[in-house]
Amino acid sequence: MRCPLVAGNWKMNLTAAEGEALVEELLHIANELFDIDVVVCPPFLSIPKIADVCRRSRVKLGAQNCFWKESGAFTGQVSVRQLIEFRVDYCIVGHSETRGRFGTLEVPEGTTGFFAESEETINLKIKTLLYHGVTPILCVGETLAERGGGITDQVIKAQLEGALKGVDPSELFGLVVAYEPVWAIGTGETCDAAEAERVCAEIRRVLGDIGEPEIADNIRILYGGSVKAGNAKELFAQPNIDGGLVGGASLNAAEFFAIIKGA
Ligand code: PGA
Image (tube, rainbow, N blue to C red):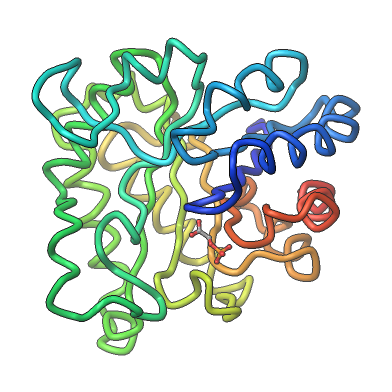
């Protein structure tokens, strides 16, 4: 039996003080729920403050990204060793925005390469997180053009194989995968529940090939992309969807509560 998980990805939103106020509101409800994991992923700068609040509660702390080296001349990066000092339990890896793939492109097309995330960097991050006992939330998903071209499953299989290359199958127990169709992120367009279920079942099948089916059965697979209170229940009721990775709707306590209840 997989424990449902709902994670809020705040992205580059909320100051540390605003984030603290939001988590204080969340504590009341989250502390009453024992059969679900609730995670918040604030910006790096807010992590120390949010860590203090989370320590008093069942809400877990996640980061939005990490770097795979322990320390060194890597300007602007944050290592996993620095994250675990604040008891970060989860870390998002390979989000489409860090891959430079946006649902609604607001940066000039030619500059998206500057985000410089690749299957190799994602693989290094996954291995480093597992080594430190932090649960990676590995994001995979296709763009609208890839879906239109009929290569959704192919793209996702390649992303999973690239990210997990050389990872010992026994370590896959400590993994969460989020299916996030790029075209559904921040656009208000949700993948319909039946199609999201089909892709998540395919993700589980590929994970079974990479590791073993019994391991894949234990991996939590989330759906992400315009999850709201109004669609969460139907999405999370699907047999292969174990919760959600929520962006915009996680910035509002009442809306996020309603989504958590949907799981
Ligand atoms: P959204 O973002 O819920 O705002 O679409 C989801 C995500 O990017 O994780």
